[in-house]
Length: 369
Image (cartoon, rainbow, N blue to C red; front, side, top):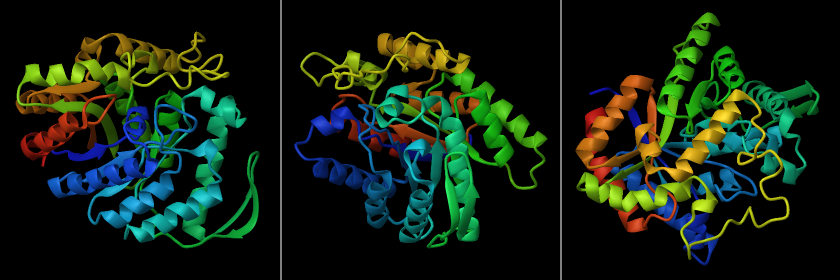
């Protein structure tokens, strides 16, 4: 079968936080899970940052990843993504450089602009300027890593000979990934020779976008090996197809929309606030760009239809044989280099998720190594 590196995508979402009385217990449980996944052969571990969100409660990614770095020894790890407009670029450059040393060179730097407008609204950050702000931040972070000194006169950031430390463990710096949904993000990543990641679009859309990025990368005339592509999907493996569907189906919708949370489990914590999701958020009516309109459609369909998840490759559910077959078909279409499986999603039971992690490692992963 196809050669593809495989990792774990682990999100500290609302269901995880509600299942424990202390956040400390959630962090400990997930770090133990990363240790076990490393022993099973998962090569990567990624999570995701959101701010003021029910999607992810990983509000301080670098702090969490430092603990994870000291608890593991082999797997590469990072967040996919840091939301750049919420970070001071000098501080982030220094945090990641120190994390690179504490992990002996295992950190991957995932960066992006963010897609959920209500988070920006609450922080008083201009959502419509997030791309320009993020591009300045990337310039500054790379300057800090490469030169150790930053003098910069931009629209959003101005620095005069800031001496940064430490330098990075990996040379010239940790791998840089950019989370891409829009055409502008893929063009930017191709021009800057960045790796690219995807997590939301349906398989045919991702395949088309990755192909476009590859063509743009070649047109840019880089003289280095082609950067990598990353895909994460929800995965549930059980002994039979029927058992896997029975365990996963009730909880996939809860991984897409708080409004799909089953009665008696959790609440729509953002929808209950004064600001809610903002006037034109991911759940709003303003179509915005074609890419944002497609994202809204995908989220709506995911909340309403189990078949939409399966038919579009957003979730891989079934026996080990079925999941291996679907994973190969997906890879044949998209051609991604790294696949990260999210086994713990919505309100699925931790026991079922842990069983899925083990079955996937023991009976699916060997076909791709």
